[in-house]
Length: 463
Image (cartoon, rainbow, N blue to C red; front, top):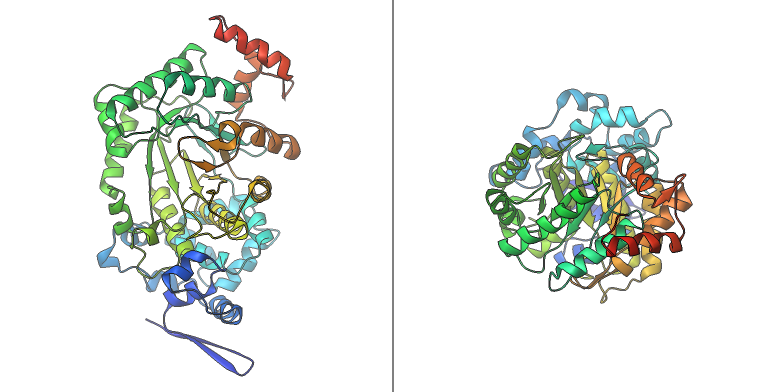
């Protein structure tokens, strides 16, 4: 284990390990302060960043932050590392890597080829040297495309997860929210319901509800009930119409154990979903959610800063070739991301790290009501991530999730982003919206026309 030092003025800063150096170089956030690993001052943070810029990328292959023998995530990251892909940057320091990523001639093709050679720790390290605009620029250059019944992540496209949650899993409420979202052009990422309980019976009923609606109108999208992976496996065994396997994941074996999962279980679930062969244009069948602070909240972070732990969760996700991954960036609370400034920075970091690793990143741009943040902060982050090429956002009725009790983004927010940035839904879904009369000539129909369509639907007719 190496130590590092940096002199600023008349003061010398010593960092006793790569793990400590990474933690001290992180932008300020409450979670690292809670863990007792954050820089004590801005000057110490700058010293750590200067020192980190000189660290060779190869060091992250030689100095595991979480011991290889004790952690299956570390083993997965190192055992699946692609030396041939890494060769393009193998001689670089972290600072060199930043400069290369920002260079004009480092394009989407180069970044795609590099992705299997980048470890999560490398991605996290270089993000700590970047301004927000740097994270946006490189995120924009990274393109990760996935598919199941439609194609997500193409240039010029922005998808939306239609999130019709209800505190009692009332099927009428959920169905009404789905119809509302579809008429706003939402739902091309997934129609995904968080169940109020982990009941197998409820999960199967919700899966059947969404699938019946999807088949009735031949909607080219995918459904998901965001139950625990073991519940979804049981639903498959019961014959329920399962499209995607959902699971929250984290960046250490111990944190994943706190979620009641293992890498072996995720592999089993993926194989089960693939065996159903329900996709039409692709076979990406996994949906993962993550969030900075999850490993710390489980006391399973091993002294690693929360950004690096988060990046390690993308290393897990990458292995399982998911359709969707999103960081639920402000959901865990102000103990980990204190205010709007920290949430905005974390969202940009997460998107950058995931995309650099070749992960199809979306973001739940959100906050809890006890955080020092508001919807203006979320507008800022959402717009910045839209510019950065984020694959998808959440679409929650009124932006207020009445079941999970947090503030997210609405159908209207996604519509705003598509308008202001000239983005469109996934191509297969857009064609369906046009065929149903929800859109005309790439534009959403007026509200009055969409109300007419909804009335016809509720009366038992067609859209």
